[in-house]
Image 1 (cartoon, protein in one colour):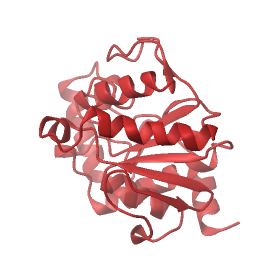
Image 2 (cartoon, rainbow, N blue to C red):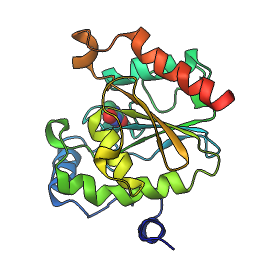
Image 3 (cartoon, rainbow, N blue to C red):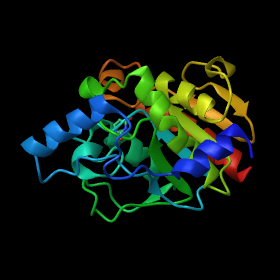
Length: 220
Ligand code: URA
């Protein structure tokens, strides 16, 4: 077993609901639980098809998004473009209605986050990324048909590379970059955040092009 296999085997692909690894994120979770006991307030579990050939890796749950609803990108502004694009390309079926019981199903795809707990200000610390990385390693290891990984933003791209035992500098930065990481093809996109879409840094067409390429690679 490699060091990565050992780390993944030690934790499994999903953190416990009360994962204690990051004191700052635990304190934030407690604050949110006190203020909003009806919210999910825990590490957002990965969502999708266990036979997925496509994995989308986001950054971390938004406080009022996945931290509230318990499903990645659900209730977040970023989720609208992500789920609409997945539906358009056939990687999801149903309607995205920003709630975990909207019946939306992912098809041949899964969504996870580099950091599973909501960080204050949407900014995880380096140590928190490192604490959460074995879950990403384990998540990937538990997808036997996985071929293509879409990383949303640079934090996601760097964490993915490190989760695969590579140097963070091994991949190519920038929107639309494509590179091989072990057995997987990685496609990097700018994050579909409100900031990126409102400023025009990321358009719906640019985002869709990444998933069109993912489809080509998977089906080609
Ligand atoms: N919601 C998530 O679950 N992840 C992100 O990266 C952003 C919003």
